[in-house]
Image 1 (tube, rainbow over the protein chains, first blue to last red):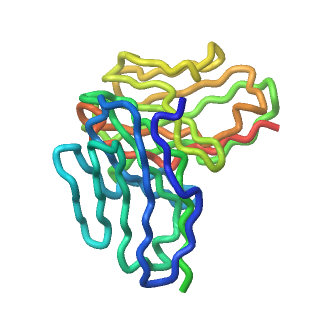
Image 2: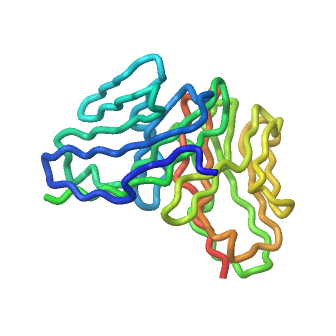
Length: 112
Length: 113
């Protein structure tokens, strides 16, 4: 059973545009929702994370929007750049848990 | 470099052979995790250690897999009698305390031929 569903699987955006990736979860015990960025041949790197007590978190060009009632959260990349081309994963962690549950990933391509 | 180190970066082995991977976590992190990532998929949890104790194992970790973390420092993951289905990226991560601040290594890419 996939506990974190991510969409779309792939995304093509023009330079300067907004990239939006969505995730939905089922387990209400999740209390930490990070986003990871992964380049080919590298491990995932933490990009930004949010807890369910806030509806939005912004760090530079990256924003997480969180809808607790809908059990959905999304990543917005503003002013997307070719260097943002990578695979993005949402994930979720249970309260004080240790196992991250990942979404299936979104391959983002930003065209110059 | 204070990141998570994994060795080797790539391993090609013949089916039926045993392989061992090593992970050196960030020195002050007491928790260490192993994940497996197949092509085009998100990482899947395999096991985790708090100091030297292995506290949780996934159903993905068959009896051909064994992990150790002697003295609570580096960790090894061994796969015995490798199968083609074991081909994947094996990722190690570490954190201090609960899993809110994972740092992943670059992984070991295993190819079983």
